[in-house]
Amino acid sequence: MALLEVSDLRVSFDTPDGTVRAVRGLSFTVDRGRTLAVVGESGSGKSVSTQTITGLTRGAEVSGTAFFDGTDLITADPATLRRIRGAQIGMIFQDPLSSLHPLYRVGWQITEMIQAHDQDVTRSAARRRAADLLGLVGIPRPAERIDDYPHQFSGGMRQRVMIAMAMALDPALLIADEPTTALDVTVQAQVLAVMRRLQEEFGTAIILITHDLGVVAEMSDEVIVMYAGAVMERAPRREVFYRNHHPYTRGLLASLPAQSGHRLTPIPGSPPSLIDPPAGCPFAARCPHVFDRCRAETPPLTDVYGDLRHQSACWLDHSGREAVAS
Image (cartoon, rainbow, N blue to C red; front, side):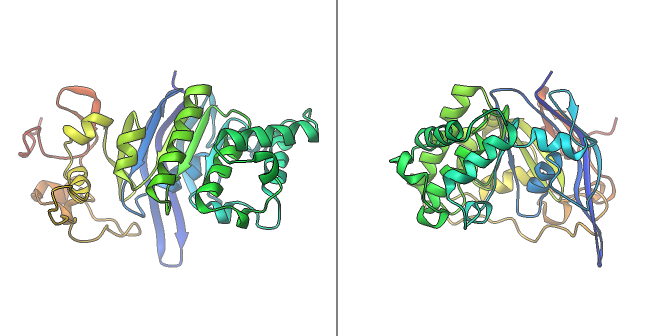
Protein backbone atom coordinates (compact mmCIF):
# COMPACT_ATOMS: atom_id res chain seq x y z
CA MET A 1 0.00 0.00 0.00
CA ALA A 2 1.32 3.44 -0.96
CA LEU A 3 2.00 6.04 1.71
CA LEU A 4 -0.41 8.49 0.04
CA GLU A 5 -3.24 7.46 -2.28
CA VAL A 6 -5.30 10.26 -3.85
CA SER A 7 -8.35 9.28 -5.89
CA ASP A 8 -10.62 11.48 -8.01
CA LEU A 9 -9.83 14.66 -6.08
CA ARG A 10 -12.07 17.58 -7.12
CA VAL A 11 -11.80 21.09 -5.68
CA SER A 12 -14.12 24.00 -6.47
CA PHE A 13 -14.39 27.57 -5.19
CA ASP A 14 -17.47 29.78 -5.36
CA THR A 15 -16.67 33.30 -6.61
CA PRO A 16 -18.82 36.28 -7.64
CA ASP A 17 -18.13 35.34 -11.27
CA GLY A 18 -19.06 31.69 -10.87
CA THR A 19 -17.66 28.39 -9.58
CA VAL A 20 -13.95 27.85 -10.24
CA ARG A 21 -13.25 24.16 -10.78
CA ALA A 22 -9.61 24.30 -9.73
CA VAL A 23 -8.90 20.55 -9.58
CA ARG A 24 -10.84 18.07 -11.70
CA GLY A 25 -10.43 14.38 -11.01
CA LEU A 26 -6.82 14.17 -9.81
CA SER A 27 -5.53 10.71 -8.84
CA PHE A 28 -2.01 9.63 -7.88
CA THR A 29 0.02 7.63 -5.37
CA VAL A 30 3.32 8.31 -3.59
CA ASP A 31 5.46 5.60 -2.06
CA ARG A 32 7.92 5.98 0.81
CA GLY A 33 11.33 7.17 -0.29
CA ARG A 34 10.07 8.24 -3.74
CA THR A 35 9.65 11.67 -5.34
CA LEU A 36 6.59 12.66 -7.36
CA ALA A 37 6.94 15.86 -9.40
CA VAL A 38 3.83 17.85 -10.33
CA VAL A 39 4.39 20.26 -13.23
CA GLY A 40 2.28 22.60 -15.33
CA GLU A 41 1.56 26.25 -15.97
CA SER A 42 0.41 28.65 -13.25
CA GLY A 43 -3.24 28.03 -12.44
CA SER A 44 -3.15 24.36 -13.41
CA GLY A 45 -4.13 23.21 -9.91
CA LYS A 46 -0.77 22.02 -8.62
CA SER A 47 -0.65 23.94 -5.34
CA VAL A 48 -4.40 23.80 -4.70
CA SER A 49 -4.39 20.02 -4.84
CA THR A 50 -1.69 19.58 -2.19
CA GLN A 51 -3.09 22.35 0.01
CA THR A 52 -6.48 20.64 -0.12
CA ILE A 53 -4.97 17.32 0.91
CA THR A 54 -3.55 18.99 4.03
CA GLY A 55 -6.76 20.88 4.84
CA LEU A 56 -5.53 24.35 3.88
CA THR A 57 -8.22 25.33 1.36
CA ARG A 58 -10.94 26.72 3.59
CA GLY A 59 -14.26 27.40 1.93
CA ALA A 60 -13.59 25.02 -0.95
CA GLU A 61 -16.00 22.33 -2.06
CA VAL A 62 -13.98 19.11 -2.03
CA SER A 63 -14.73 15.56 -3.09
CA GLY A 64 -12.66 12.42 -3.58
CA THR A 65 -10.33 10.65 -1.18
CA ALA A 66 -6.74 11.12 0.00
CA PHE A 67 -5.61 8.24 2.20
CA PHE A 68 -2.40 8.97 4.06
CA ASP A 69 -1.11 5.92 5.92
CA GLY A 70 -4.70 4.68 6.23
CA THR A 71 -6.35 8.00 7.19
CA ASP A 72 -8.58 9.84 4.71
CA LEU A 73 -7.38 13.44 4.94
CA ILE A 74 -10.40 14.78 3.05
CA THR A 75 -12.89 13.67 5.70
CA ALA A 76 -10.54 13.99 8.70
CA ASP A 77 -11.57 16.37 11.49
CA PRO A 78 -9.47 19.50 12.21
CA ALA A 79 -7.79 17.93 15.25
CA THR A 80 -6.60 14.95 13.21
CA LEU A 81 -5.27 17.23 10.46
CA ARG A 82 -3.38 19.37 13.01
CA ARG A 83 -1.82 16.25 14.46
CA ILE A 84 -0.69 15.02 11.02
CA ARG A 85 0.48 18.35 9.59
CA GLY A 86 4.02 19.10 10.64
CA ALA A 87 4.56 15.80 12.42
CA GLN A 88 3.83 13.36 9.58
CA ILE A 89 3.47 15.71 6.61
CA GLY A 90 6.00 18.52 6.32
CA MET A 91 5.44 21.45 3.98
CA ILE A 92 7.83 23.86 2.28
CA PHE A 93 5.88 26.82 0.95
CA GLN A 94 6.76 28.84 -2.12
CA ASP A 95 7.74 32.06 -0.36
CA PRO A 96 9.77 31.47 2.81
CA LEU A 97 9.76 35.16 3.77
CA SER A 98 5.97 35.19 4.03
CA SER A 99 5.87 31.72 5.62
CA LEU A 100 8.23 32.64 8.46
CA HIS A 101 6.92 35.11 11.07
CA PRO A 102 9.03 38.27 10.74
CA LEU A 103 8.79 39.18 14.44
CA TYR A 104 10.09 35.89 15.87
CA ARG A 105 13.57 34.42 15.74
CA VAL A 106 13.88 31.37 13.48
CA GLY A 107 15.02 29.16 16.35
CA TRP A 108 11.93 30.07 18.37
CA GLN A 109 9.68 29.21 15.42
CA ILE A 110 11.27 25.79 14.92
CA THR A 111 11.26 25.09 18.67
CA GLU A 112 7.60 26.09 18.97
CA MET A 113 6.64 23.73 16.16
CA ILE A 114 8.52 20.82 17.71
CA GLN A 115 6.89 21.32 21.10
CA ALA A 116 3.44 21.76 19.56
CA HIS A 117 3.60 18.17 18.28
CA ASP A 118 5.67 16.60 21.06
CA GLN A 119 4.84 18.03 24.47
CA ASP A 120 7.27 15.66 26.18
CA VAL A 121 10.22 17.50 24.64
CA THR A 122 11.72 20.16 26.90
CA ARG A 123 12.41 23.66 25.65
CA SER A 124 16.15 23.17 25.81
CA ALA A 125 15.99 19.84 23.96
CA ALA A 126 13.78 21.38 21.26
CA ARG A 127 16.23 24.25 20.88
CA ARG A 128 19.15 21.82 20.50
CA ARG A 129 17.16 19.94 17.89
CA ALA A 130 16.49 23.21 16.04
CA ALA A 131 20.20 24.07 15.99
CA ASP A 132 21.07 20.57 14.76
CA LEU A 133 18.53 20.92 11.95
CA LEU A 134 19.93 24.28 10.86
CA GLY A 135 23.36 22.71 10.69
CA LEU A 136 21.99 19.72 8.80
CA VAL A 137 20.58 21.95 6.03
CA GLY A 138 23.89 23.73 5.66
CA ILE A 139 23.44 26.96 7.62
CA PRO A 140 26.86 27.99 9.02
CA ARG A 141 27.26 28.66 12.76
CA PRO A 142 23.78 27.29 13.56
CA ALA A 143 24.15 27.79 17.31
CA GLU A 144 24.49 31.53 16.64
CA ARG A 145 22.13 31.91 13.67
CA ILE A 146 19.33 30.24 15.61
CA ASP A 147 18.69 33.59 17.33
CA ASP A 148 18.51 35.60 14.08
CA TYR A 149 15.30 36.93 12.54
CA PRO A 150 14.12 35.83 9.06
CA HIS A 151 15.14 39.14 7.45
CA GLN A 152 18.74 38.48 8.51
CA PHE A 153 18.92 35.46 6.20
CA SER A 154 19.32 35.44 2.43
CA GLY A 155 16.60 33.92 0.25
CA GLY A 156 18.47 30.64 -0.01
CA MET A 157 19.09 30.53 3.72
CA ARG A 158 15.42 31.21 4.47
CA GLN A 159 14.48 28.35 2.17
CA ARG A 160 16.85 26.11 4.13
CA VAL A 161 15.20 27.24 7.36
CA MET A 162 11.85 26.19 5.88
CA ILE A 163 13.30 22.79 4.99
CA ALA A 164 14.69 22.43 8.52
CA MET A 165 11.28 23.28 9.99
CA ALA A 166 9.50 20.90 7.63
CA MET A 167 11.87 18.06 8.55
CA ALA A 168 11.99 18.79 12.29
CA LEU A 169 9.88 15.77 13.24
CA ASP A 170 11.12 13.44 10.47
CA PRO A 171 7.83 13.45 8.51
CA ALA A 172 6.94 10.55 6.28
CA LEU A 173 5.88 12.94 3.49
CA LEU A 174 7.38 16.27 2.44
CA ILE A 175 5.40 18.60 0.17
CA ALA A 176 7.70 21.13 -1.48
CA ASP A 177 5.88 23.90 -3.37
CA GLU A 178 8.35 25.62 -5.73
CA PRO A 179 11.23 25.20 -3.25
CA THR A 180 13.79 26.76 -5.61
CA THR A 181 11.79 29.75 -6.88
CA ALA A 182 13.84 32.97 -7.19
CA LEU A 183 17.05 31.24 -6.11
CA ASP A 184 20.24 31.44 -8.16
CA VAL A 185 21.48 28.19 -9.66
CA THR A 186 24.18 27.66 -7.03
CA VAL A 187 21.78 28.02 -4.10
CA GLN A 188 19.18 25.98 -5.97
CA ALA A 189 21.64 23.10 -6.28
CA GLN A 190 22.43 23.33 -2.58
CA VAL A 191 18.74 23.27 -1.59
CA LEU A 192 18.05 20.25 -3.80
CA ALA A 193 21.08 18.48 -2.36
CA VAL A 194 19.72 19.05 1.15
CA MET A 195 16.34 17.57 0.17
CA ARG A 196 17.99 14.52 -1.41
CA ARG A 197 20.20 13.96 1.63
CA LEU A 198 17.23 14.17 3.99
CA GLN A 199 15.25 11.78 1.82
CA GLU A 200 18.08 9.27 1.80
CA GLU A 201 18.53 9.54 5.56
CA PHE A 202 14.87 9.34 6.62
CA GLY A 203 13.22 7.55 3.65
CA THR A 204 10.88 10.50 3.18
CA ALA A 205 8.41 10.61 0.31
CA ILE A 206 8.42 13.95 -1.55
CA ILE A 207 5.80 15.72 -3.64
CA LEU A 208 7.68 18.35 -5.61
CA ILE A 209 5.63 21.14 -7.23
CA THR A 210 7.65 23.10 -9.76
CA HIS A 211 7.76 24.90 -13.09
CA ASP A 212 11.41 23.98 -13.51
CA LEU A 213 11.79 20.89 -15.68
CA GLY A 214 15.50 20.84 -14.89
CA VAL A 215 14.62 20.26 -11.23
CA VAL A 216 12.17 17.56 -12.31
CA ALA A 217 14.91 15.79 -14.27
CA GLU A 218 17.23 15.88 -11.28
CA MET A 219 14.86 15.02 -8.43
CA SER A 220 11.80 13.04 -9.52
CA ASP A 221 10.98 9.37 -9.89
CA GLU A 222 7.53 9.94 -11.41
CA VAL A 223 5.96 12.99 -13.05
CA ILE A 224 2.39 14.29 -13.29
CA VAL A 225 1.71 16.94 -15.93
CA MET A 226 -1.33 19.07 -15.05
CA TYR A 227 -3.29 21.48 -17.21
CA ALA A 228 -6.51 23.35 -16.40
CA GLY A 229 -6.99 21.38 -13.17
CA ALA A 230 -6.64 17.93 -14.77
CA VAL A 231 -3.87 15.42 -15.39
CA MET A 232 -2.67 15.37 -19.00
CA GLU A 233 0.10 12.80 -18.61
CA ARG A 234 1.55 10.64 -15.87
CA ALA A 235 4.72 8.59 -16.29
CA PRO A 236 8.15 7.76 -14.88
CA ARG A 237 10.61 10.64 -15.25
CA ARG A 238 12.58 9.19 -18.15
CA GLU A 239 9.42 8.44 -20.12
CA VAL A 240 8.24 12.04 -19.75
CA PHE A 241 11.49 13.42 -21.16
CA TYR A 242 12.32 10.84 -23.83
CA ARG A 243 9.07 9.05 -24.70
CA ASN A 244 6.30 11.52 -23.93
CA HIS A 245 2.89 11.24 -25.54
CA HIS A 246 0.67 14.24 -24.78
CA PRO A 247 1.04 17.36 -26.97
CA TYR A 248 1.00 19.57 -23.88
CA THR A 249 3.98 17.70 -22.39
CA ARG A 250 5.80 18.10 -25.70
CA GLY A 251 4.96 21.81 -25.70
CA LEU A 252 6.43 22.27 -22.22
CA LEU A 253 9.64 20.51 -23.22
CA ALA A 254 9.89 22.46 -26.48
CA SER A 255 9.73 25.73 -24.55
CA LEU A 256 12.92 24.90 -22.63
CA PRO A 257 16.07 26.88 -23.50
CA ALA A 258 18.28 24.87 -25.84
CA GLN A 259 22.05 24.81 -25.61
CA SER A 260 22.25 25.07 -29.40
CA GLY A 261 21.01 28.66 -29.27
CA HIS A 262 17.73 28.10 -31.12
CA ARG A 263 14.78 30.36 -30.30
CA LEU A 264 12.31 29.14 -27.73
CA THR A 265 9.12 27.55 -29.02
CA PRO A 266 6.28 28.82 -26.81
CA ILE A 267 2.86 27.19 -26.56
CA PRO A 268 0.46 29.58 -28.35
CA GLY A 269 -2.67 30.86 -26.63
CA SER A 270 -3.70 30.81 -22.98
CA PRO A 271 -5.18 28.23 -20.59
CA PRO A 272 -8.99 28.06 -20.58
CA SER A 273 -11.23 29.57 -17.92
CA LEU A 274 -11.84 27.21 -15.01
CA ILE A 275 -15.20 28.89 -14.39
CA ASP A 276 -16.51 27.83 -17.79
CA PRO A 277 -14.11 25.19 -19.14
CA PRO A 278 -14.64 24.13 -22.75
CA ALA A 279 -16.13 20.81 -23.78
CA GLY A 280 -13.75 18.08 -24.82
CA CYS A 281 -10.01 18.20 -24.20
CA PRO A 282 -9.00 21.30 -22.20
CA PHE A 283 -5.87 21.68 -24.35
CA ALA A 284 -7.73 21.51 -27.67
CA ALA A 285 -7.62 25.27 -28.38
CA ARG A 286 -3.80 25.28 -28.17
CA CYS A 287 -2.99 21.84 -29.57
CA PRO A 288 -1.25 21.55 -32.95
CA HIS A 289 -2.83 18.11 -33.52
CA VAL A 290 -6.46 18.98 -32.66
CA PHE A 291 -9.32 17.36 -34.59
CA ASP A 292 -13.11 17.27 -34.19
CA ARG A 293 -13.25 14.58 -31.52
CA CYS A 294 -10.93 16.62 -29.26
CA ARG A 295 -13.48 19.46 -29.09
CA ALA A 296 -16.44 17.16 -28.44
CA GLU A 297 -15.22 14.45 -26.04
CA THR A 298 -12.94 14.62 -23.01
CA PRO A 299 -10.19 12.00 -23.39
CA PRO A 300 -9.68 9.77 -20.32
CA LEU A 301 -6.28 8.86 -18.91
CA THR A 302 -5.33 5.67 -20.71
CA ASP A 303 -2.20 3.51 -20.88
CA VAL A 304 0.14 4.34 -23.75
CA TYR A 305 3.04 2.49 -25.34
CA GLY A 306 1.83 -0.68 -23.63
CA ASP A 307 3.15 0.58 -20.28
CA LEU A 308 0.81 0.46 -17.27
CA ARG A 309 2.94 3.16 -15.60
CA HIS A 310 2.52 5.61 -18.50
CA GLN A 311 -0.87 7.26 -19.02
CA SER A 312 -1.99 10.10 -21.26
CA ALA A 313 -5.30 11.96 -21.65
CA CYS A 314 -5.22 12.33 -25.43
CA TRP A 315 -7.15 10.98 -28.41
CA LEU A 316 -3.94 10.51 -30.42
CA ASP A 317 -2.61 6.99 -30.70
CA HIS A 318 1.04 6.10 -30.15
CA SER A 319 2.02 7.37 -33.58
CA GLY A 320 0.28 10.75 -33.24
CA ARG A 321 -2.78 9.81 -35.31
CA GLU A 322 -6.40 9.76 -34.15
CA ALA A 323 -7.05 6.83 -31.85
CA VAL A 324 -9.21 4.06 -33.25
CA ALA A 325 -12.60 3.95 -31.51
CA SER A 326 -13.23 0.76 -29.62
